[in-house]
Length: 173
Image (cartoon, rainbow, N blue to C red; front, top):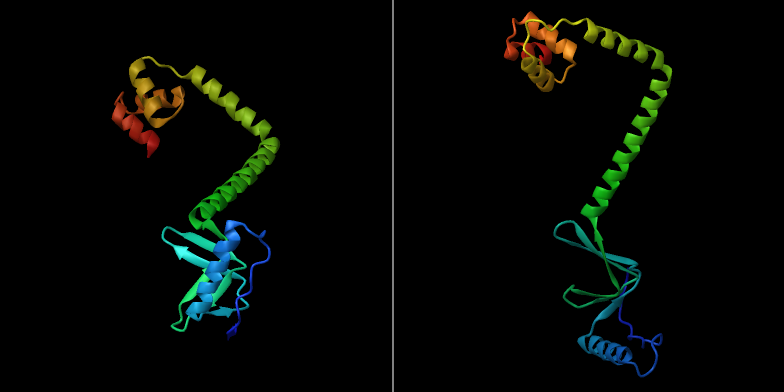
């Protein structure tokens, strides 16, 4: 980047007579009066704001004053880095979940006969469990708190002499 003193060019892209042209010409005259020097070779300016917000100016017109202050002209776009990070994390999470679901589907396709046998065994256990001597409310409470089947809840209650707290502790610890 070189700092050179160049005359400010007139803006010819805008239609003649528009208010934008008038304002642009006035701005150019003021820049010349201030003695600002145009800086060439800058293609992008990024200014960091609080909360990870960036103000981006692509293809800016940059002027430098004698006391190292810069004036940047151009169209500003706002980039929210936090929102981009959240979107990236969500896409990564979805990709991971999709891979896990695919792996589970592949595994479940191979393991269906074993799973079926386990389910049949659990049904047989539930049928075979004798609930005599155990209160139905206690069974429901143990099932809800320990998140277990009815057969396991009954077995735990019988092992712990119908003590609900100890039955839950034995199932969860």
